[in-house]
Image (tube, rainbow, N blue to C red; front, side, top):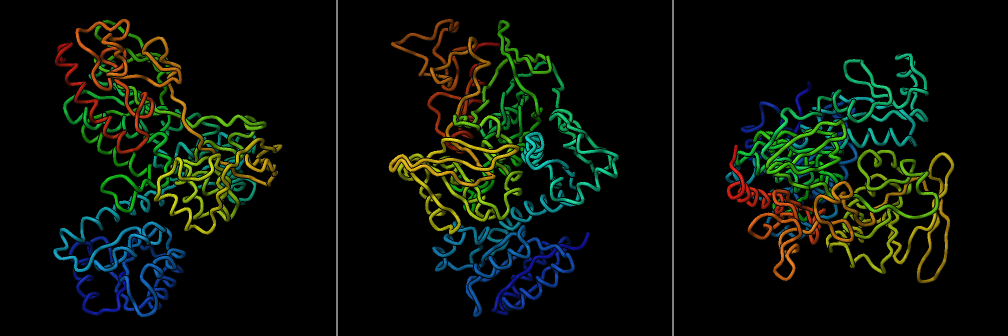
Length: 557
């Protein structure tokens, strides 16, 4: 492996010398530190390195240099090294401009000058950024190859599963890739076998189920034990937080995940209002960190497995999985989350997965480079998607039923959308039909104020229109409201009366459902706050009440 580079650009020899000294002291065993005194010299150096395929992990540039602003240099350098972490060296007077550069995605982070002592003001931030870059770089060297048709729903399901589980892979579309046809010929396969997943050892899977694929990439697909102190259904932010706190406090803990850690939040391209992450982090990054943390404390995570039934057996709660396995526990946490509401328009069912998608991940983003993308929705998830797609798509058009974005979207996202030139927002507008034979070819929209209808060419439609809870399988076990959300705690007590069938001589704990020992957290809970931070808070808080339940209701094993 070539030695990885950290490139530092500053027109002050004294600053450059000190920064190189500090970087070499910490990172010289893994990285070579390149110092450059001008933006033009830096671009020449980067172009030469790019031709020679030399990897660059991080670019650090002074905010003010004679030729151009440091943030502008970092933006230009992104064309050569799009994955390199971009850091601005700034002073206190630069704070406002620096924050604006972060908001407009010109930079990933900033470090204030002076940074003494580096152990506090330089190394921690750089460690974090380099760790993220290394995770991408090391896995990109060993990619799976996914061969199939662009408009295949199974192809996208497999790609989404791999992406959300942090497994790097290479798309090979049979429509436009000569390599795709070469791979099929080498394996002795035809297009009837698609999609095909080609593994690093030369083995391959033909039209694999997600369970088969999970086994091949060494994910845990079955629980190790039949009994646990705590079972958590779902591994979104709340489920992962419950797993971390439960396992760290001595509970034998299992998380059961139907899709991938992070759930709906895991598809967010950038979460920018989460405490202590000033430059934001992706949903997949948050999920990856939480998974590592939960496993470090001893929690088990099985995926993809679907919980299909819950039943009560005295003091035990039993969970049946789609493969017929039944697991038992003292306490059950329902963190099964929500899914995007279906768009009820003509033609959508036939074209879902063939150009029309609910949510969106890097899987679909990479298929939309230099194309027009339509996004349905006006809340934060739609705004985050629009900003992310705008980095790759030619034009992003948001279709919003409300008369402005301000109704459901955070101000910071609205400001970013307003400043992104290739994003267009159509308010008071909705989709009324989609058309296409083998894949999406056009959409029909209507403006609710003017009643004007338009049919527009479209090959990519992403839908973010509210949430529906995953609770149909729980009806008859725990109480749900008219929309399917699960009431907990004080919402279950009416005029001093506990819910029917409640057997304990106390009211339900906060986050406890109508069945003692079963808790509900996150978006699936009635009245929850739809924010990542509150989800994490609920997951961790649930463990406190779980301990109370265990102490007061049963003997610990």
